[in-house]
Length: 602
Ligand code: FEO
Ligand code: CA
Ligand code: CA
Ligand code: CA
Picture 1 (cartoon, rainbow, N blue to C red):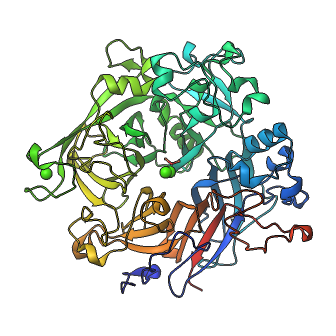
Picture 2: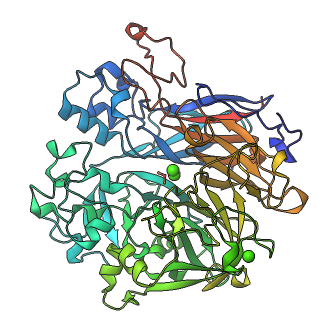
């Protein structure tokens, strides 16, 4: 059932009806159109590298747009006619990407080249028109598993980062499993290295190795056959290689010759991403989630202040902000009678799931605050340090984003079906009020004094997600549940220029039988909590990005893993070209290509 009326601006829309999980299409509101800007395999530097999925090579892939785009930004120049598109490539779906006869070693090398980042210039005739990408533009760049990165911060050079390949512990080849991210006020892009453990074979014997999910059978991708650093069992000199992943990376999309960095001061975990606020005192504050069941929310406050001047010295200074400062982890307390938090999601008698919290320091300016841990140990094995100080376990905190209009911070807890299950870590708490939390929730944080550098905060739950038609435990900030779009598994967050929250989802097909989508939620006034679906993505796909350029009349999403449950011979998605299967000979290909999509009203 469509709900009338979006509000305001150039992105007024009538919400789309829920889209069944079998639909292999991008569904947009009435009056809107969509088209891909760039797809997996599109050449960045020369048409000579044109996509040919039956004859793919690692060399070509390293010169093409990568696979499974996730974080997305388009940074436009003031005239609005030129810009740079930045996307990261989280992982590969090798069973649908490659013909089965492809040599296994080459398959691994291509997959490695399909990870990382892509930077590509985009152009258009005028504002409001759709963008096209420019082959061979000066800023175009690919970052892969072979691109050198430099470590910054207190753990750089520590023994924990040393391997037989890097006796200094200061450099590392490449980045992997880059998930969400954020563009900084100084124009660089941050991205989180997330499920790095799944790439490595490792003894998995120490408490830290186990806490990060490393084990002797953990490298399902088999990359060790082409690069020994992925096998810390057969090659003990590489046992620390996994310590060199799980960081926030920073790249400068304006300078294709710059060396990207990994910031040890922000800690190491399964980083979803990082997003920056500038505090009242001018310090850079990075909010970060660790996406695992029962893991934590962190923030980093820089030692130095942001310099907003528009000159090269300020730019160079700002790029050092994430190298030194204080790393905190969040502790939440609820204020409702404990007996009322019974795991059903029923709103307690004080009217809200809410309370207060504090930011517990783990490292202050290179000095450990955790007894028994050196600063390097806190930063490399951050989960163990956070365990030791009694941080609050959350239901898979994914994207964490400050609202640029209000300063309030939003935390997407995507789900946690282990909460309250006997033998698992814990049952419902006020900040995670549902046992077997299948559909996830969103927490709203107000820093004390509305200052991002504060050490205490207030919080409340904005949304308990789900399909209200079948799930009595949904909650939409008090807005009538029968007047919202069903939503499940919130993951990536964004804001429009009016401060409305936009939520993209990852997991709706498995929970509420609907394709994943993108939803708008007003946060102020009578509409607060009114979830309205803007689009849905194709079968098996996840809605990443998202990017809301409402003043320009456009929304962008990175469509990730469309058709991922298929195979080369039996594809489940043909997005975005919808080439009829079996017409490979004419240079087309009947299979899905993860792509960046623009949605606009012509
Ligand atoms: Fe890559 Fe937590 O999603
Ligand atoms: Ca309460
Ligand atoms: Ca995500
Ligand atoms: Ca996710």
